[in-house]
Image 1 (cartoon, helix red, strand yellow):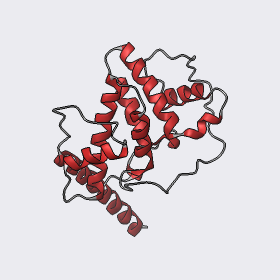
Image 2 (cartoon, one colour):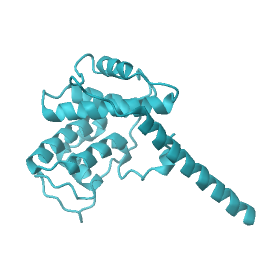
Image 3 (tube, helix red, strand yellow):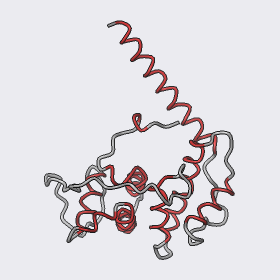
Image 4 (cartoon, helix red, strand yellow):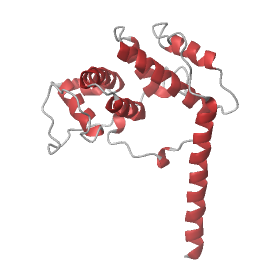
Length: 207
């Protein structure tokens, strides 16, 4: 299992790791215009995942500031706002209350369900298709973290359709990432954690 303590600390926790992954994916797109379109899509997702930010007068400016900050200012896109790494980032003054009720599948979590909802509301586009495929693979990984014994790709596709109220579907011929890739990654992370724990225990014994 992948532990949060083994992951890089989130710069802004309110958006979750899936948004960070989308930003990292956006960086890999070769065309600047395509990256800019994807960046605007990510802004819409961020607004859904963190609705409290909409309480601000110019909330989209805030979202762009947050996205650039989370990208370490390396996201090369046409921003509608000036990008200034020296300017301090405004954070929410109050902690966002996480909603626990109404989650259909706890192993997917609220952030992923919010992302599904946000993408489902987007118009048909290449970005929407890419995000849908990214979400599907994320669902498979999180399902395997919950139940390593087995996972049915058809079930993941069915639950994606359910959570999106039938608005999201995978393209014909889409292939999920192989389950063994995820399991191997989890095993590697667990081995690292076990080694780290053993090292800490050894140090404590020496004291």
